[in-house]
Picture 1: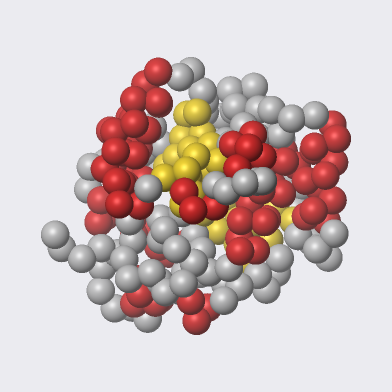
Picture 2: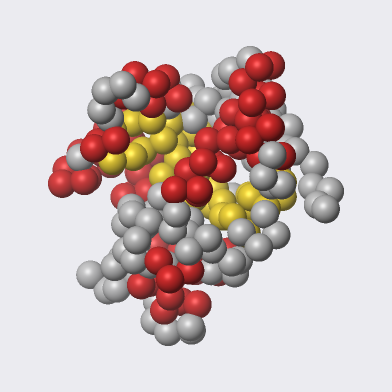
Length: 215
């Protein structure tokens, strides 16, 4: 039995929802025995990173957490999910459809959105897929660095059933160096489907190579 206290978002953090939606989110977590470790930073803008992404359960628990805390976040996800009859519901939840063939547009548009809004928490999965990704996508870093907003890494421990909120980091411009502590966090906890772990994370976990290949 875990005794982690549920984080208490501050006014600076984008919020939405009702008592009912918060209750639903807490029931989604508690019903499966999940808790939360850590606190969200008191910042109005951030890029939240969820990794590793090896199962649809990652998305389920991430959604449950945002509902439980009443967080108003924007999720970046693949456009193919936006089909009738769920497309409208996904947009209401904060999901943004993206065309993976036009990722550069997402970086430009996201930086502009951060500059235009007073509050924005953008949630991204740096692996881009839940099944043996060959590389870490760097769009999240270019967005955070270009917009001058911090990165907040999160992960899930499927053995202890804990959602872990990591330490906030402001990009320095040295992507390789900045990714090292993130990779340490993401590879230090049991995944839902470890066989689906991305190649860079498998290599990092085994002590081989750097977070990103040299371009």
